[in-house]
Length: 320
Image (tube, rainbow, N blue to C red; front, side):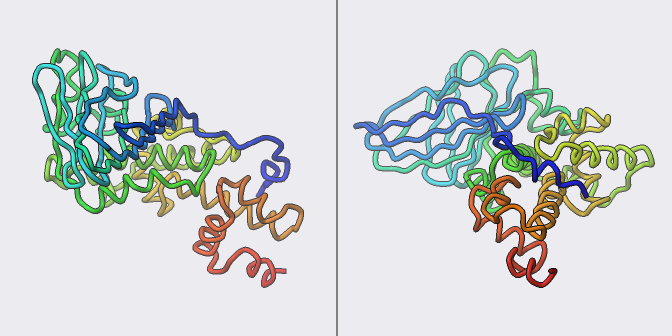
């Protein structure tokens, strides 16, 4: 295997593009709102807010008509006040999917509460492609391009949905690994929300299905394309477009053929390369962890142990 990309690393791994980081600490609240752009047409918002008095606030600038937006609440709650009189409330038990038209909803906070949530916006084209043109009935009003009214769908949230959302707050990954993880997590989150909204198992993908010969070839081609540039791999959307599959079929195909998601295949290959470099003894453990895509050595050691059954140093000793 070629590990030249890791040995010859001379620049920082491609970072996940970040937008404005909003922070406040005043009589109204202590707030931190981080906006991240893991892929074209996708933005993730990490919200952590302590509310000191009742007040209303408009959110950070958001795309409107051509995007679907969601909020999954991990702690506390907030009311959304849309134009036209539409109102809803989100809480740890109730996630929301919405599509504002004329303006974003106003957030209505109550004093003495903490609000922590993950939000995302995803362009309509990717939403439609994710469901292969068969958008579940409850979500149809959200993707109606001719709609002139804001639309909102409240969904029962469970532990699985909250756990998936909370992982987006994680800082153990960096660069390409974090970008691909976040992109995949949001698409999975939307699929989980759609299943909850439709109370149907029809969106579980093709885990029990089969791939055609052409699809198998496309998935193999996608893996080659994914690993061709280990320093800066393509996004899920780019990968699916390159091989002529929908993102849903591509994800399912990876699970069927490789027993892992696209993110896991990339992560495992990077760990394999890290193993080879560490055995050669030419790069320090800390530097390898950083180059491979981990923010902390402890996170790298945990992932390495999970893959090889032993921490990096012990593995090197037993293999040499």
